[in-house]
Length: 501
Image (cartoon, rainbow, N blue to C red; front, side, top):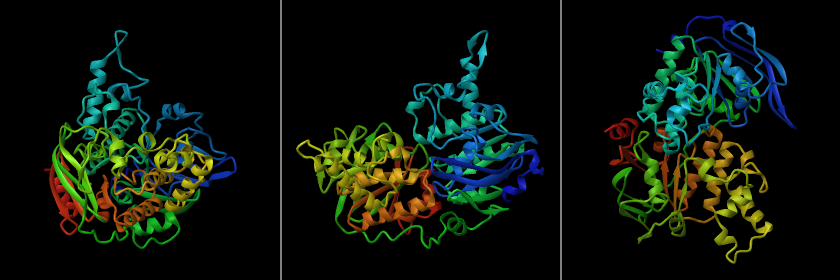
C-alpha cells in the first residue's frame, strides 16, 4: 500500500495554498515565483540541491521572513505570518535540520520550553517529564527526560527536536531533513508517528536528501532547482534516478565511484579497544581500503571513532598507525601520527563558522605552513586556494564558512585535513544533510583518498552509503562488535541482522 492511500479526501482550499511567492536577498534571487499546495493529511516532498530554494519556501511558510511577492491561504483564510510565533499560533511549525535546543537544560525542559506545565503556581515537573517521555518513546528513543541535552548524540538531539514539535497542536509541520542523523529503526518509528498524525488530518512538507524515503512516506513531489519549480509529480512513486536528474539538471550515471583495490599493507590497527560506550573492538584497515562502520543509533559508532582519533579516553586496548602504537592523550597525538577525524557535527566541531575558508584550512595546518610561528595572509591564501581547487569548494579564500551551503562547509572540513596528507582519514556521517550533487562530489573525494593509498573509515547512518563505498563493513550493536563483512557478504539484510543482534 502506498502512502497516498492513507490521505483523507479534502479540497486544497482546506489546507495550505501558496501562489507566486518569491524572495530576493540583496543581489541574489533566492526564489522565483513559486506555487505549492498541501492538503490536510498529505505529505508533500520538497526536493532540490542546496540553494535550490527549499529553505526559502519553508521559512516563508513558517513566518521566518515574508515573501516579496505572492500570497498564501491556510485553512481557507488569508495567511501572512509576521514571525514564527505567529505561524505556530496558527498551527504551522518548522523543524530545522540543525537542532535549536538549549544544551544545559534537560530533555523535558527543552520539549516544553515556553509552555511549561504548572500546578499550584509551580512547574509540574512530574507531568512534564512524563509527557516528554511518552513522546520520546513514540519515536523509539528511550532516554531519561531529566538528562541534559548536552549529553546526547546528534541523532538523539534530532529526535528531541522532533518530539518537541509533535507536542505542539500543529496542523502542518515542515520537516527539514528530519532523518539526517537517524538510523533505520529510528526513521521507521518517525514514519509511523507521521502516519498516525496524517490520519488525524495533520499535513507535512517533507524536505529530505534521502530520496529512497520519499516513496515510503510522501504522497506528491515538488522539485526545485536554482530557485525555480522544475517538476511536480502527482505521486511519490518516481524513480530515484529521474528525481536526481531533475534536481541537478544533468544525468548522474553512477552515484558511488570505483574505490579501487586495497593493497596488502595494513595502515591502521585497532586492538581490543574498550571504553564505557563500547567493548573489545578489533579491526585493521589497509592501504587503499574503505572500511565502513554500520549500526543503529546508540551502537557506539561515533564513540568508537572519537576514541580511535584520541578525542575520548579509553579504558583498554591500543591504536596503531604504520605499526607504531600511539599514546593518545588527545587528538593532537593522532594528528601527529597521520590520523585525522572529520566529525559528524561540522558546525560545532568541524569548522569555525565565523572565520574564512582560508583561516579554517590554516588552523589545521599551522605547523606545516608556519613552522616558525609567523603566518602571512599570502600563506593563508595559497593554502586555501589549493584546498578550494582540490575539493571544488564554491567559495573564495576570504569568504566566511558560515555563508557556504552545507555541502561546501563539509568540503572545507575535509579539505583542511587533506592538506596534511594523512595516512588515515575517518569520516563520521560525511554527507549528513547534504544534497545529492554535493554528496556525489564527496563520494568521489573518498574514492580518490582510497585510490591514493590512504586508509579510510566511513561511519554513516545511511546503509546504502556504507555498502556503496566500503570494501568491508564492521557492524556494531549496543557497543559490541558483531562482525566484519566483505563487500560480497555485506547486503542490507545481512548488516541489519548483525546490527540488531
